[in-house]
Figure 1 (cartoon, rainbow, N blue to C red):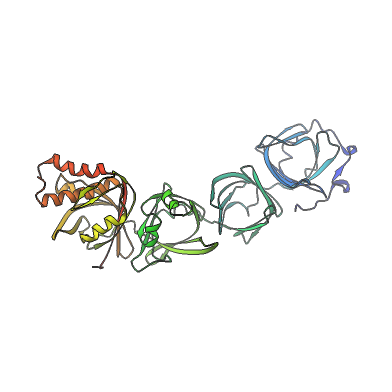
Figure 2: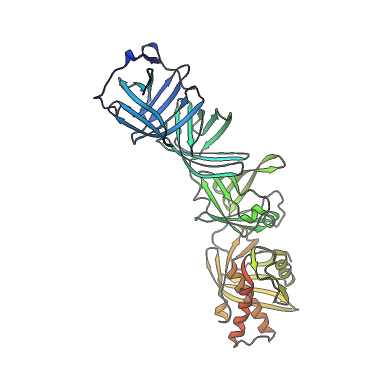
Length: 505
């Protein structure tokens, strides 16, 4: 409720006997600020900005309202036009002693008395980014000094990104306009950290926390988690957040299998609010397109490195349950010398290709019907493992038809990107790029391969086996090229992640 004000002459309106014509007076400077008026049937607060904009909220006996738009003043004639083109006020004004303004609408005999409320910038206690996370609701509000705001909101499965609006306040009361809709009610700032908004229209009370820093840069990188509800001893989830707003989820766990590993998704961080946009394949599994989480970030939170805790709400039946998961930042450089890993699991997604069987290492693959279990079964049957004698060399080996096959190649490492330089061993082979992740104690390693890497890796393996069996001539470049072409023709797209771990065999 707007505070009751002492009216001029003991009234909140006066007859036309009080009316005066000040046609030669320039009010363009003296009207800047916030003005408020209240009577038994009328209440309104108006903020008039120097840049030609205004915003107003209150109740004129027909329910709560909030509007904004532009103003024009010619001598003592003021016109307020809303952003949708309607006229909010058109009439004459008179300002007395710089703190009382009379506003008389065209064709009306009643003059409303407005009192000057504030001449300072928008209250500093409201300026900044505030975030709220509840079951089935999340919002980030960034409020600027001039009362403009930006809202990013997730509610009931619907997502609105970067909505522009205005925030009007007057001594504990507020009005917010966003995309032509408005809310109106009371607010309170608690200890400078909490903003409580009570909406009169919906009778809801929401608490927003002030964000002292924006975590959008701090989240960039790779994070590992092994504390999921279904986690087992060897489980590990990995999220990679890129600076361009994309993210990739992979790992060795039930969640990774069910919730689509290796598929690129997108994310946005405002303050400490993280919003994920799930890939379409995740929606097919029954997940919501968007989900929101609150980030608690602790640099050097453990001896192993940076820690982030994600707070979220998961729907269980008809209820929402709060969940908290802790993630550790993965090393941004690889620790390879002396490490040896055995194959444990394959994740495959986004597979498209020809609907026909193609021969591959004494088995056959149909990439129109491919799933992770087929490659997983094959990789386990050949007892695949990798070893790094030094930082610049990889040795991988496998068992095929009773023959122990070992391939060694130089590698080039840039951060988490590892290029296996097979072409330096023999020009008939192709180089393979794998994005490589290790956890902090080096117990697990992931190889992530996009389509071209998959084709080159399995093409190299196939050529090596065929050369070993005498099925190819090393000098027959056309036949060797045909092996790679057979795989490339069959595969339209594939995302492949090989997960390896220490000491399970």
